[in-house]
Length: 284
Ligand SMILES: NC(=O)c1ccc[n+]([C@@H]2O[C@H](COP(=O)([O-])OP(=O)(O)OC[C@H]3O[C@@H](n4cnc5c(N)ncnc54)[C@H](OP(=O)(O)O)[C@@H]3O)[C@@H](O)[C@H]2O)c1
Image (cartoon, rainbow, N blue to C red; front, side, top):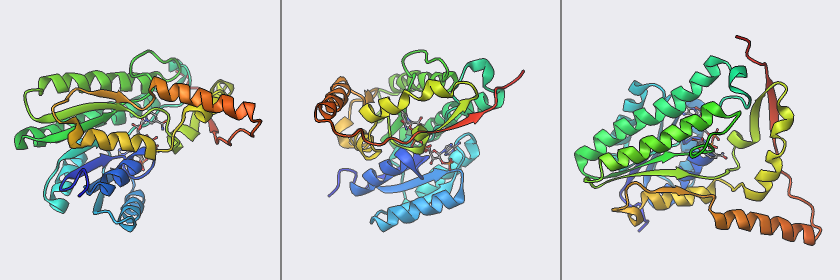
């Protein structure tokens, strides 16, 4: 019997990248999974992929920035599998890399809409359900800048700082219930989000060091997905308010040692893909 046997999990943004890996990890532990994102074709592909892997899986189109669609997602989970036990607010986007005044208000606001409002709506809908049933696990995904100001990624980092603060406050508010509320920073994950960057024209060179950083510290999504599985399991019962990261000091040191060992042995550096697309500077 798997560690999530009998549980039903919703993963927003679960159609690729980290979200899809989390869905696979949960399904491997016998959870039924419901994935959602904005395009029907992506949802269909992800559900087929999960079912081909033996998962009990369903999916629905849902833009997390729309509270009605988030409510419909929760209902879809209940209609498909009869209950709801785990909710992962994973859907997240970034504005183009660059100084705040060069990013358009539309680009800035789309990050707020998905990352902040999306996490708020997902938390609201999941917590209403969990508090009423007296159990459940809510996992909100953090990211770069969740603990410190991050120049040139102000919308993204600000949204992640907000998610961290919001999540930990929510955990305190509901600590007397049996609902677990957790914040999880997956570290650097090898997904399109990391490898396909939009950069404000004139700042392209500034993101090039990311290749080196990725080589040292980025993980395939299956690695942080295991941590997300642990968070969703009974291992975290009674530990609401946990804020965990995949990028631990041990992993940071491990990445440096691995790179050092590679240089000593004169092995070629593994290839890292970084696609940079320039976008025009916003003019007020
Ligand atoms: N990759 C990293 O290095 C890294 C590091 C730290 C934290 N994170 C966080 O981890 C999470 C997942 O990132 P990822 O790397 O897996 O990104 P990704 O590969 O770009 O996947 C993002 C997923 O979210 C969906 N999505 C985007 N906007 C949405 C919206 N408004 N409503 C519903 N779904 C939406 C996408 O599908 P559609 O576009 O088809 O809707 C896709 O399924 C994000 O919260 C990110 O901030 C990532």
